Image 1 (tube, rainbow, N blue to C red):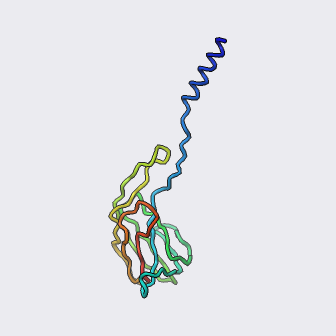
Image 2 (cartoon, helix red, strand yellow; image 1 turned 30 degrees about the horizontal axis):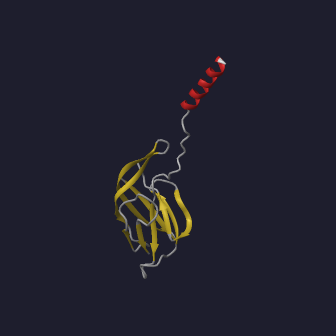
Image 3 (cartoon, rainbow, N blue to C red; image 1 turned 90 degrees about the vertical axis):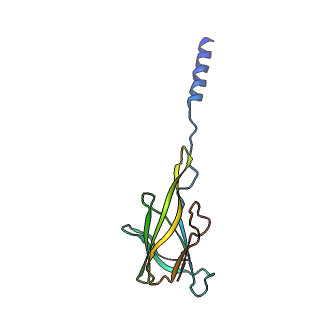
Length: 149
């Protein structure tokens, strides 16, 4: 009987020492959402055959016909430059921002929230104009940038 209580004590101690397995169900840092609009009718989304890559990086979007894209921002810098190509015409957009880290949980760690997003430079080859519609990127529910072409 003495061993029974001793075994029960060790079992209870072992169970209380276990940690919950925390799995991260949260998303990573939100991406920059860009929507493409018709320059003749600014309220209408317009698809574009597009190739997108970050300066000095591989292609993020190979040739695709899209009316919106989601692009990651560099969390180790205060700016990210993307090149947008359609029919061999390339435009370059540079985004600057302030990154704030936000604690999610012990298992997920931190995500970056981007504030004061600004469009610093652009070339106007096939892109007629671009504007920031939401300067804070904390989720991926609404567009942050509108591009008219």
